[in-house]
Length: 232
Image (tube, rainbow, N blue to C red):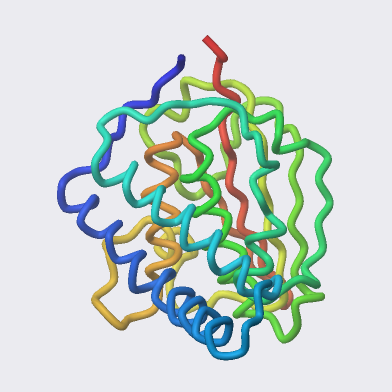
């Protein structure tokens, strides 16, 4: 089985733990409310949003475990089509549009890390747009190396082919600084904006996946170029 060496430093691994508060806290509160509702009223089925919260909490927790504690991550095919429906349910944006020309189920990857990464990018795009209908998520085969990427982690140039996950949304990044600095930066202080993209950078280092941002004319696209790893 192919394994990826985890290049994160001890300081970066400590930052990963912030996902518990940044991305899991609200989910846990909602799950807790639904559990009380079940106990109080005898309702046995969770709503799609609550189910999404439970699953999001699960896969983000596994991603934290792997990124913090493992020095090598196992790589295998995605068996759950990377559970994007659950991602949408968990952030209550079911109206996001998808156009997948490359089936993520064929991708060989540390699945939970990719799930947590896509969750973070889609959540940011959803929050930046006026409505969920303005968010489009695409995937496509990308031949060659994405030289235009603003952030290229060590080891990425060892791969020749990629799957480009692109999240398009309404709105632009502030022009106060170059776009590269939004992704290639140090961890933001607690309660400051920007941790979502900082986590995308950490995941990029682990997956050897270049990241690009285009933001102009009232639209933004974040591209995450996942390498196509050899299966052996």
